[in-house]
Length: 142
Image: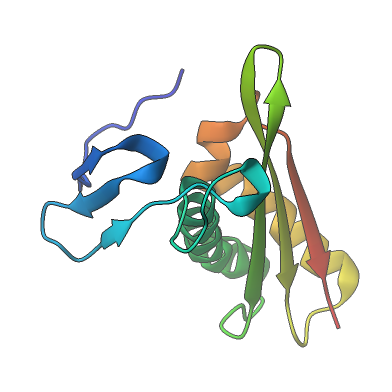
């Protein structure tokens, strides 16, 4: 297991009520009601943990894409990351799957895929899920 050499920032949140509750960060920058999606028998009408994970993973991946872009000498500033987080039965409980589709305007397909593959090596979320969650990364180049 790889451990960070030093911690630069720690996010803190308090959650009550689980999937049908409430979550807020200590600074209140994020303050959300949580509801299970209708597809899982819940009421819907509010965000859910999978949506929050999809946004967080996508944002982190795009940040790491900038590092990969610098290595490969390509401009990633106009990139778009679309993230999908699925949840479904896995044995006695549930498991996740992730699909990340990255559009890189002005970058040829082979280079775009190299950038996305390298990003998957660099991204902290990718490191955290590696070996635990199936993650598919797809590049869409010019």
